[in-house]
Length: 73
Image 1 (spheres, rainbow, N blue to C red):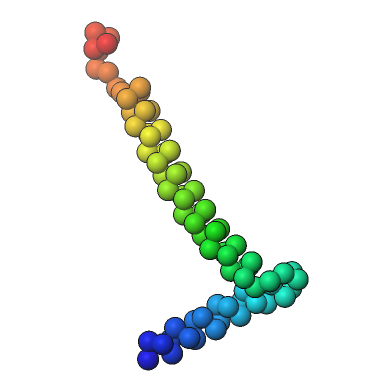
Image 2 (tube, rainbow, N blue to C red):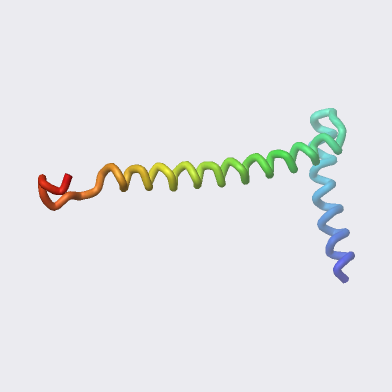
């Protein structure tokens, strides 16, 4: 049962890659590896963006704290 489901998704997924490759006139393997690399790049970009925003918010909170008095410096 598991292998039937796996075979179904592989067939449909590879068919998409095959059709794109035929349309562009390149090999299917190139299209598949490009999708894999793009997946890693976008996940890495999202994680890097998350870390940058977390760092930026932390710095902003440290610099712009609300002081109750002038003498709190």
